[in-house]
Length: 501
Image 1: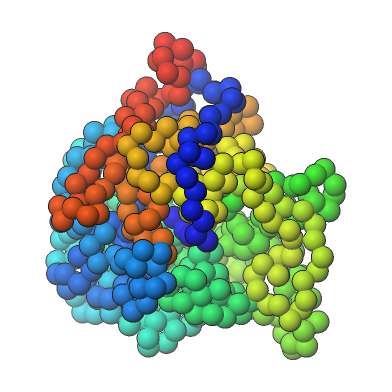
Image 2 (image 1 turned 180 degrees about the vertical axis):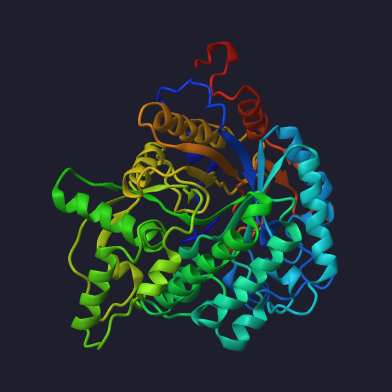
């Protein structure tokens, strides 16, 4: 779950959203998996307990509290490290098929490097968690890297900016496959590389806060893809035969709705999608960077007097290594924007946005979520699913994050219920009308968490967490009951008798 800007909205503006769209009342297909999610850095807390090392987000938040909206840090978060049994019961009560969680790299190897033995207490924590989930019939979907790089790797060689990270991540991935392979059938290598690279090493808005627009973000992108590919091949060659699991990378994207039917606005939409999802998706699914990304960055680099493109080339060997490293396609989707053709930004502006070069905005009439950059427009979900189907040859698709934040934490969160209903209805439309091969949906988030730059100001859970309570009490919101009903009935109709096959 990411952050782009802080813009306060009132609860009233959220509750004013009441969809008039027709709700699809089909049952979800028999093989369709419904789940909930969260990530280690956002809920575990216990930031320096039981041998865990410091991460870039620990350093970022605690060294610069003024960079976090409410000056908070992930030191305690939702305290799931100590309350994991309660959280597992919470997942069980919702009746979902799977729970997406992440492993904190620094709990396994405190400094990030593969040492002789992984941290035993960290290993025990995840083994207990994973085995408990499976004992209750809940499938774990495990992410190896959800933004929380061990700080030592950043200090020693620049983290994701250095090719050294590729083999170090591969070593960590192999250890996790060895330790937890018997409990895990769904593996995610890396979550949202765009946020890791553009926000972490481009604009510098995220940890580790490196400002290198149009340069660092692309170096990071190459290293992330190579790290993912090596981890995939390790699983494929060494563990797949025994564990029969699946491996993928999670990529996030908005939908970019063309402002008009003009060809130039449609091209602006496609360009935005290729820079946002395609930058990471195209090398994995089709091979190499998207053509429009290569062409634009190379052209703007040349016009700026550079001898080579700011986008590092992928060699034939690297293209071969990365291509095909997926068992299904993952998409994190929250919001849509509108786009139109725009003037060409000055070549001296090397930012990611300038490289895309479109006019991008949120229509005023679309309701906004609690982080400001949320524009609630459910048709964008269906349109994005169709774009993924058409662009990547109709792969199996799993939605690995989707949800809505607010700034109040109200238990009467009808706005969140409306959001889930309408976005899931568009998912069903994509399945039954458009023949999209969508096989899973994961709601973000099951409980309120530490939302990166917005801290505890942005609340996105179906269970409220009282962050002023040392016990971090969990309290179900209205949306928790609604989502439990969906998981139970396998349908969006209020009356199960109205569900249709």
